[in-house]
Length: 217
Ligand code: SF4
Image (cartoon, protein in one colour):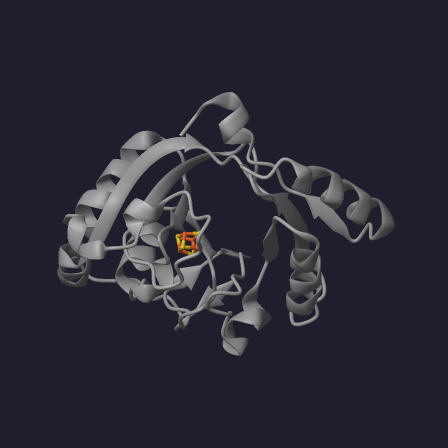
């Protein structure tokens, strides 16, 4: 869990002010968390636009340029999230930490949401986060200040050298962090690599992109 400050009860005036703060939003939608430690949970996904990491294999390249996406008020995002019925919000991207998440996460918490984030950790943490999934990318490495707060380390594996990259990041994470290796969807040979590695190194587990098998967004 990460918090920039103790969360206090806000007055109506402050809530209204926070609700006016805008974020570049690529999409928001109600779905099932398909990967990682919370696989299978109903979750409201908030995909913020903008990414400066630029992995060549990225499957959401449309998210990179935030100027191509509308700026949406926090109040509107939170309202739609509430209407979904779940109280689990997942903020993703793009790279969501390019934005100050304080207003959005305060408002989600006030409405009873548990707030999760999926990040490369390459920009400073902000906001109030109940679960931090770090997916480190070699193209722009995570900041050291992020590691103490990591709940789940999820490393995408294409080749053997990605396993070394996974271990390099794992040593910086707190004891108790969930350690997960995830095959890259378009690289089926990565599955065998991971299976053999996890059998030899059982502190790691496997994360699969089950939403792709189930055909849910
Ligand atoms: S950090 Fe994520 S959104 Fe950014 S390029 Fe890499 S995979 Fe794509």
